[in-house]
Length: 212
Image (cartoon, rainbow, N blue to C red; front, side, top):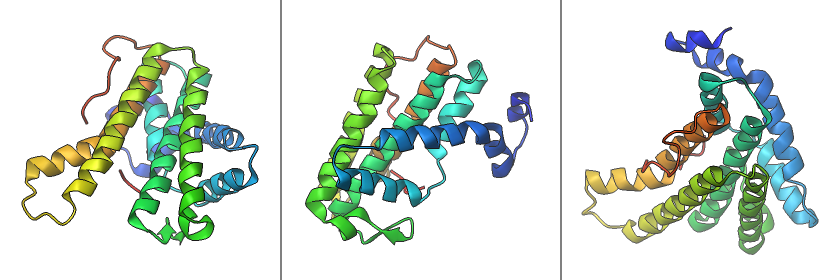
């Protein structure tokens, strides 16, 4: 199936078929990046990765890359990086929300406790950035740093607004812009950069978190 068919209406299955082989490479990259010198961190990372997820964010990176150029190692690496960042946010959010399950399985905090889970999430964030640093590309780092700041701000804003009844539509849009849309925006930008499109790629579009 050629990339030219993206201009047509495709089913979700057809879209995934465009990047199915490359997603397997992303999974392997994530598995290698999740190995730590501390057994608990490796176990937590394995637990989360084995819990599944639709991999929407890495898929977007890979599709965006194919729009501008051939698939390459940078695209695979960036797809793994964005999923690792997303996973780190899920770990932290589950601690904040006192969640007992994630994707239908026990959450990390339910199995390992809050303190260990928070530290594992921190480790995963740093590992994602370490993988990004290997690209030796300041545009990539600029995007990811801006993204992380937006997502943390979004979580703080959400905590501040919990229980308040005067939340407007604008307030809500600002929240999801930071928590979820910013990550999807970054995925598209990173993929475009990996595909060779560099113009207008610096900075993160204001644009929030999903458990998909």
